[in-house]
Length: 261
Length: 291
Ligand SMILES: Nc1ncnc2c1ncn2[C@@H]1O[C@H](COP(=O)(O)OP(=O)(O)OP(=O)(O)O)[C@@H](O)[C@H]1O
Ligand SMILES: [Mg+2]
Image (tube, rainbow over all chains, first blue to last red; front, side, top):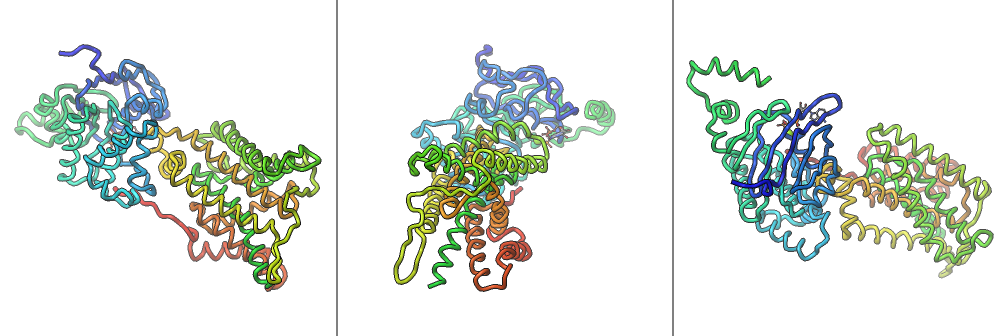
């Protein structure tokens, strides 16, 4: 299908700690250029930690992260953003007292090409017209959904080849989640931004993703095409909330619980 | 006409307090640490300018000495953050506060050793000149202090609202983590805030020394500036300046019209009232994160 050169991100045997706590226990994965790859997992599985380690916010204890052929593990985020990967963190994390326009401008901090920045600002506003309307408003006064849009728009301003998105659906209504995922999908197709998407909402994540990984307790326990994952029994039961027939279920539960804990 | 003179000299003092308070707030906003050596930065800034311009030292032109002193103080601020504080990350705020208090002692001692413990006056082109009209006598030095403070405030306002670096400083102080995620080099930005507050301290020191004398213990004035910053809310730059002006104005009026001793207590009495009735300070900014 494809050679190693269309792998935009390769993570190999990554291990990360919070003090003595090992949060990432040897994760390996690949993201191909142009894809949307999702990482699913329950609370505390280590998804956020994985993204932080990839984007340089945390340093790994072991393992490598290769972005477009170059090893980047242990680099500072400003170098990594400059190299084309941006991390849109969990819980929005906007600059509350700056205006919407200033927030967006800060996304381009590592760039200096004024004309290109102006063009990208217009591009961001074309995907999120509400942000243009609220340009001069303090970002802290936006609604939660608008703040999420701002966080994504601000991330786009770094002109990323690869965007790491941590739970963009957090705290949003189903309707707004649909809308945001629609935009994420369009950005992927129209602006060719490769996406690595962490989600609790497996249904919506698998609906846009090409490929998916499932994490449990700091490890990857499943990896497959999004379609295959969506039809897998384990994923259906634990992440999509679809239950199967009663007889099988008792036994399967018990077996799965062991990997679960 | 007494009144106008009191107002002008009160405002002039208030400008100096306000500029020191500005330094406190700059660093507090950027790093969440309080620099208790801010008053001593002011004092060192004044001495550096004395060293550059006074005839018995280097004798440079006053107008050249000002930017040089600002540059030297900016370098000192940057170096302190870069060389010392950056290696303290992960330590408690208390240990950083203690460190800045220690820095204050070191600066006072260094100033005494280099420039003596006697009061020294800064030689300015306008020393001792007056402006007279309608029977009002105003010192040129006091007018200059007010004008310089207004200009500096306007420049700082433009810097923070119009330049990429200024907006990034605000961004890093509002949400350090997000700034880090966006590729803003937060640590370097913090060092630059220290540099900026060093330069502002130099201006405050030069203004202070130009209307009187400077000695190594002058930095203790920082306590009043600290009260000014707290009156302003400790998170607001305009608040710090206005807090400084309030204290500056209250002092001469309470000593003129109030019972003896009141003027020494007045700044802290006002601080107490503000803290009781508006615990966040006069200009507290509220920032809430929506879920
Ligand atoms: N700052 C921290 N200090 C210590 N332990 C932490 C820290 N942050 C996370 N952890 C631990 O690391 C593990 C992984 O956390 P992480 O935030 O990566 O999970 P997650 O998969 O993103 O969960 P969620 O879906 O709830 O966001 C958890 O057990 C968590 O308790
Ligand atoms: Mg998380």
